[in-house]
Length: 440
Image (cartoon, rainbow, N blue to C red; front, top):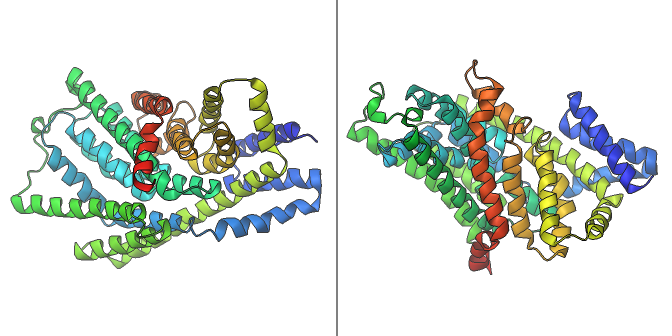
């Protein structure tokens, strides 16, 4: 059976299993082994132990449970709320200030959690009620939370970026640095959209002074809010700075972040044994799901590589006789379509080993291509009608919010992300300037 036919069989089987609701990791790994057994015989099962060894014994991937644990500690201890309150107090009475705070803080929370689904759910649990209580338009509130929570995978420390670096043998530090300017550009454009939109339609975002139900903080309460928010945001910068400066590896910085989150919770008298136990169980559940997905997707990817998919794609793209940038655009379209049916983990693990070597052979920098992949995934999982993250947003929305309203709420924010993607494609130095400056 040729590699082209094998690829079609694999994709059809995946769609069928996903439609039946099969677990993602089991479906990917099981399909690869089933097709491999009927194609090559029992020898294909040797892929499993080698994949386990290369995946689960990777020092870089050990950072994943640590970052998830840090995010859960900060969120459930209430320090995430302190970040939100401090940001809102700093911005003041500007129209749309609550939405601007949400973009900034939700992106930080999303970065702490490291994955889109948990980022949106955590952000929504903190930010949605204050926005609705302040009289914000529901579409503005939901779209802002989606934009901020999902943006976490573009802001270091990002788990998909760690996975990209691990699967393509690239520097995590350079990936983190490369994503910082696109992330900053995205935040600036999102805030600009909010300011312009609320100025044109003031009913979308009432001024806080127009809402008399919001509490007035005393000077002592303001000091406590500012202190808690400063230390929480500072912890994120310490974790990131330790990686960029070379003081710690991503895994060591994750451990530093966990220790810092525990110390902050104790120092601010927010640490409780029940909370600590609940965070441990939730982290274990998230990590277990993530590890099964990583194993299944890695087995699938390795089988795909063994059967020669990389050579097929290289020959196909060469045969098209297209300019290199058109090949990159084609890869972006494929990943965009994949985002309709699978989450960010699997897209990275399936596409990074296949597309990155081809992009490098075409003369492009792997860090630039990796950051484009992360931005593309950010767009893909939010795009109607079947974007993966839309259903996370539905889960935290009021019961009477339909999918049509959610589609309308996220559309302008997706367009902002699309502008960032196109801009980074046209001007690669937006991605490469900072890593080249800091790391050479």
